[in-house]
Every structure is written in structure tokens, then in C-alpha cells.
Amino acid sequence: MANQYGRFTWLIHLARVATVASLVALAAGFVLTVGWGIFLYRSAGAVPWLFMLAALVELAAAPGIIVAFAMVRLWVTTYAAVMALNGRVRRSESVLEASREHLERLADLGTLSDQAKAMVYHDREIEAVQEVVNACLARQDYDHAEAVIARMENQMGYGEEARRLRELIASSRSATRDEMVRAAVQRVDAILDQRNWARAQREAARLAAAFPDSSLVAELPKRLTVKMNARKRELIQQYDEAVRRNDVDRSIELLRELDRYLTPTEAAALKESARGVFRAKLHNLGVQFAIAVTEQRWGHAVRTGQQIIAEFPNSRMAEEVNSKLDALHQLAGDPLTAAD
Image 1 (spheres, helix red, strand yellow):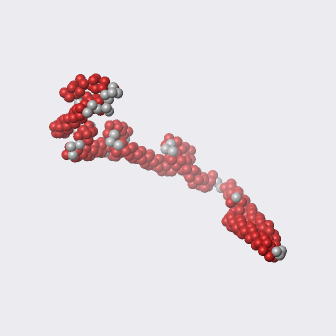
Image 2 (cartoon, one colour; image 1 turned 135 degrees about the vertical axis):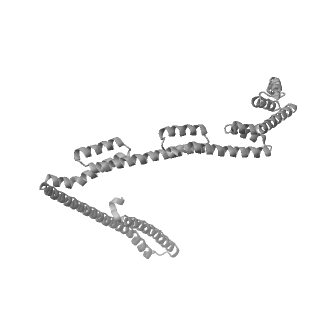
Image 3 (cartoon, helix red, strand yellow; image 1 turned 60 degrees about the horizontal axis):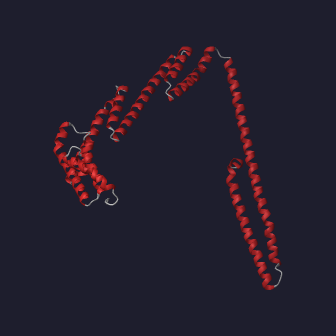
């Protein structure tokens, strides 16, 4: 619809709104006129000729408003069609003029020597080859680009332009390679942020084999070491804080993660502290187990006993709990004695 009316679409919208508003106002006026006429007729008993005349005028005005909108719409449609036809005529004139100029150039070229024609078409041929080469570079089809340049050099004799285009290909290859290296290094950085050290190490080794002369790739092992050491320092600090708070569960959780980072010397330094933490953990579990048995919470006693056996299988407490576990299972399964 907007294309039908062209740039006068706004006028059609405005006329439509005005028509609807006028009809609504006219309808409201008609209702009021008829209402007042009926009211006066009932109250005075006289025929309200004036109100009847006004109602007839309002009824007659409605078709007039609709006809006015139709005339505006017809005018706009006609004007838009005329303008569109005028545009097509102008475009046709432009095409005819361009065709005339092209025919004149062909006629002029017919009178030129072969050497003069070669000079005229030189720039166009080079431009066409450049476009093909650029399209090949955009999709990284370097073999096709090299073949196009070779044909240009051998068949057209454009040696200087061939040399320049080969330099462009070499530059594009280098730029593409750098982009590939940067993207690969960014992927390794993302793996490092996830603390997936083993995978990051494998990726770094693969990139080192693929890009042995890249300085960015050469720095990856160092960055891996730096990030691992930073995480190790963070874990040791958190472990010290957990020990000071006597948070045994958190201390053990941190020790298990630290095990991936510690050197033998560092592990020996933490050995005594770790023993204290595990003894405290075993002691806490033993107390929980004894309380559960005393309070006859057999289900809780079974779960705590199983945890002792799983986490401290070589301890004396694990042996003692294991000897009582069958009886505890029976008590936990007896609905008359099970309390948990």
C-alpha cells in the first residue's frame, strides 16, 4: 500500500484518520439531535422541525465525507502513478543514452590499432583480475588465486602486476596465519580460566608443533605455569584460613585439590598439618557415630560408619565400625527399632 501512494502515503493516513473522526463526530451529533428532538416532542407536544432538518443534514453529510476521502485517495493514487511513469521514462532515457555512448565508443575503438586497443583495455583487464584474486583471498583459496595470476602473467604479459598481486597473497597468508594463531591462543586462555590444566597443556603442545615460530604460542607454557602457581597460592591461603577456623571439612576439600599442584617438597611441608586435619576429621566422624548409636539412630549410624570406612579404610576405627555394620544394618532395617 505504501508503494501505491509513494511519498504521499502520509496524506492518505491523515485523510483516513480525518474521515473516521468526522464520521464518528457526525454520528454523535446525529444521536444528540434525534435525542433532543424526541425530548422536545414529548415535553412540548410540537413537532421539532428544526431538529428533523438538522438530522437530515447530518445524514446527508456522511456520504459527502466518504466521497471527499475517495477523491483524495484517487488524486494521490493518480499522482503517484504519474510520478512512477515519469521515473520509468527517465530511466529509459538514461539507458538509451548509455547505449548510444557505448556504440560511439565501439565505433571509435574500431578505428584504433591493436596496440592502442591494448592500452585502452589494460586497466580494465587488471581490474577484473584484481577482483577475482580478492574474491579468492576472501575465501582463503590461495591456489586458485595463484593460478589466476599465472594466467595473467603468461597470457597477458602483465609481469609487474603479477608480482604485486603475489605480494598481496603473501601478506594475506601471513595475516590469516596470525589471526589463526591469536584465535587458538584465546581458546587456550579460556581453557586456563577453567583450570583444565591437562587439556591446556595438550593444546599448547599441539599449537607449538603447528606454529613453531610463533612467539604467542611459545609463551603458552609459561602462562600455564604462572596460572597454576597462582591457583596453588590461592588454595594454600584458603587452606590456612580453614585450619585457623577449625573448618575440618573445608580443609580436607582444599587438601584434595592442592594434591594436583604440590611438589614433593611442598607436600612434605604440609604433611604434618594434613595429618592433623585428617585426625580431626576421623575424630569428628567417630563422635558422630558413637552419638548415633547411643541415641539409637541406626540409619544415621550406618551412613556415618560407611563414611568412616570409605574415607579412612586403614584406620583402627574403620575396622571396629566394619565389625558392627551388619548388626547396624539389621537394626536400621527393623521398623520397630529404626529411629532415623
